[in-house]
Length: 325
Image (cartoon, helix red, strand yellow):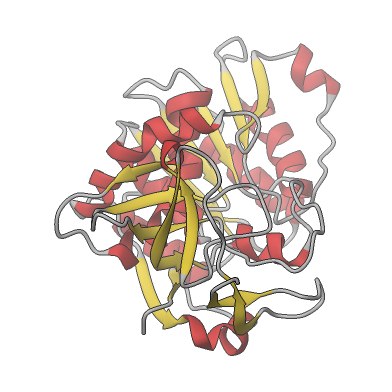
């Protein structure tokens, strides 16, 4: 007879998850263990998982959303873990963890802080550590720097040794806050897209790496503007595509690839193996735990998942569901 637990459950891709009883999952492999979930972040990736719109989604229902979290092992050890790519996620009292996709947490670390920060920080951290040969002293542009992941990318660029970090985005208030996170230059993308791209080209034509959370038309216009104004087009410019909040497709001009030392690559599930992500966990966890990376974590009882799901968060906030409160 199955034992039940409370979880956030998606039964329709058009509706928010509901807090209800659900069968407790059972470990089945030699590296699997059932953990008590202490905290799990409500990331944009989780919203797309629950709506079936993420590129990895299968549409399988019912679905417990949640892609990562902090849990307590049966021996009492706290771990950060990434969930299986199945319909049984982390927004629940308990979750099955593959120990190969987890790392122990330092003594006294705040589970809510780790659950809030790891996912938005991981994209740019892995991009700079695993997808390119990033060298201290290089210059970085964060396109879409006013979102949570973008704000993390600004901090991570500086932490890993960038000589200049340029943050570009539309929200003026959030842009102004980037200076306190380490941005050397901020560029507004508001107004006419082509005019905004010209401003961006003037400010960022000499960067070495672009971390792009926007894609779509902003990326199209920015590529042309930056390469046109670049003094030495034979010097490498690497464009790392991570998010697509401004559009799923962008037309890359063929001339951009022929007339400059310009490469476009992506960073996400599939382009970096799970083992590559896990290898980066300890250093990133220590950076968060030591306060070198800042995040505004907002703990919310998991029982309130339905009412919180569609409520917009304020700038820089990351909702973290806590099943135990």
